[in-house]
Amino acid sequence: MSKAHVIGLGKSGVAAARLLKREGWEVELSDSASAKTLAERNTSETLLQQQELAAEQIIVKLGQSPELNGANLPELIVVSPGVPWDIPVLNQARQLGIEIIGEMELAWRYLQSLPWVGITGTNGKTTTTALIAAIFQAAGLNAPACGNIGYAACEVALSWNGHREAKTRAHSNTDNSLPTSPYPSGTLRANGFDSDAPLSLTQPTQTQATAGDGSDGIKLVASKTATASVHLPVFASASFPVFASSSLDWIIAEISSYQIESSTSLAPRIGVWTTFTPDHLARHKTLENYYNIKAKLLRQSELQVFNGDDAYLSKLGLSAWPNAYWTSVKGKDFLISEQGFYIEDGWVVEKLTATSAPERIVKVSALRMVGEHNQQNLLMAVATARLAGINREAIARAISEFPGVAHRLEYICTWEGIDFINDSKATNYDAAEVGLTSANSPAILIAGGEAKAGDDTAWLAEIQSKAAAVLLIGSAAPAFAQRLQEVGYYTYELVETMERAIPRAAELAKQYQASVVLLSPACASFDQYPNFEVRGDHFRQLCLAWVENSKVSKLELANTENSSQQSIV
Image (cartoon, rainbow, N blue to C red):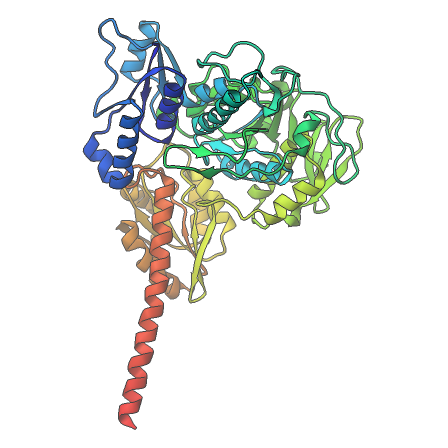
């Protein structure tokens, strides 16, 4: 039996271990965190997970790294996204000739018979991914969002593979099975349907499709996919998700630089690059290396969509990406190439070739999310949908119903005319600057966490322009305080924790007549939280509790006043 080792006891690592185990591998799963540390993060969930893994005969070793000594070495090591690519044990494995891949690459090897959309970028990728998935699902396609958003990619592979295995057992005379190793061989079926036509991994399927609005759809997707019914994923157990049908039509994957770095053959049908600014340099070392990692995904994509309003990407332009589809919120005159998508007279307009006529697709006002950055996200999502052959009606419906993304300028509640906004996803200066730009002013800003390298100049300027006061939390608080002083901004307080930040923010908002309390940290969360989602959830819980306690206090005060008046009478 082949042996594999998975590093990282997170969602991605557990899904990868289960997928390999199901495919007949002997699997060992390790995490450098101790059992005590993991239990402190989430006692009940961690304990249940370990019990399930033990029942599935997956060996779990906590508080240690893989041991690569002796004869019984693994043939494959799969790393979770958060595991650095150059830790000593991985360097040792390379010297021993052991193959090392990431969890995303493993999922790709099982799901490469399906067309993928791969979205990457420093900022904007989560919103763009969610919007693309919403459009595809509105078009009747089973297209789950996964990767750095939603499900781990291996969760999707595990669930889909389970359905296909059951189907194979029920119809043993058909050839629909997936390979029993992560190295596919033979012909795999197109788009999850029982078709004799294999899916081409190098050229899009050229099939005429008539859009619901009467126009011809872009001829890139087999017509069978256009008639699939909506299948929204649901969790069947704590182990892994089960999708409502064995037929998956597309994979919509948000893919971080960490996941690209640890992938070798990942090649989406459509690649999308949202933005590029310095980030994760502690891991990737140089801006050039960070760029090249991101660029690898786009180079391996059949079709490419770029945000033409991004300063870095637009400078490279056609010289680096001559066949890409570019976007611009500024209009046709700012479109880098002769093919792309832009905003004009309040409409998203597509121009597919140098000779084709511009065509209106959807009104920009259909999107309820504010800010120019969200218009950029809208353009890239519409471009992706049109390149996948989706008609205007489905696009307009999905966009008008799209609620936004949790932890990205997420409205939480209103207290005495003050809105509380969760922007925990803003984990770097550029994202936090966008958050402040989009918020009403004056605002009370909550910032801080685990600091990242980057240029904070524009962010500090936005603070000076829009923030009535800043409350600093986490390990970055002292350094942020110093930077604020250096630019002549002194209306800040070091409150250290979110518990202290919320009541103080409410007080300051009343004092300065601020209309918004905004959590937009400009930092990673790992100094105080497992991830930015937990940080945002904590902010939400505290804000809602504050509002509820305020209502109770008002009610008690009113009752006391009534009692006093009755006593006087």
